[in-house]
Length: 161
Picture 1: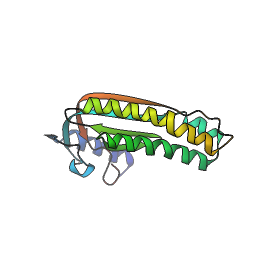
Picture 2: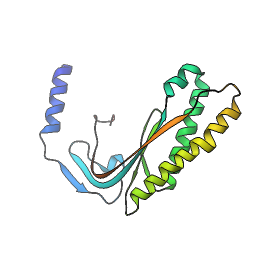
Picture 3: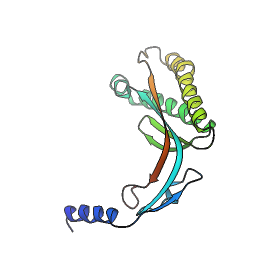
Picture 4: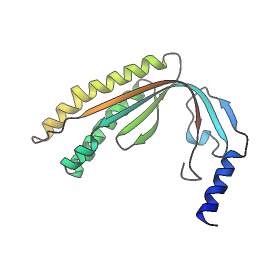
């Protein structure tokens, strides 16, 4: 089978079946959602925390410093998100995503965002400068929050989703 045939067949297999959609009461694990046609509807608040200018960091410093800096950010953001009740479901480079559900999901998401900003300014930046005297890169970051009804699905193909 050619790649064109494989892609066409795969698209048809996504479009053809009816979807099995369930109402969620918790943030599902990957295996809780059927790959072929499963979905979970959830009223959720998402927090995306992203370190800014990691490309500039990578261009200016060696790989060990870059890796340690990114790990500091991801460690702090992940710990704070989890402490506020988020389920961590995604990492992408220097970005982490947490999902909040429940009555106080919006409040906890905002508290987590503020906590991550505190960690960057009061914990990570001073420690980076104290660790390396010539460290002049200025850590920045952004936190996005979105709330509403979501339909969680799995994407990709078997063993790559």
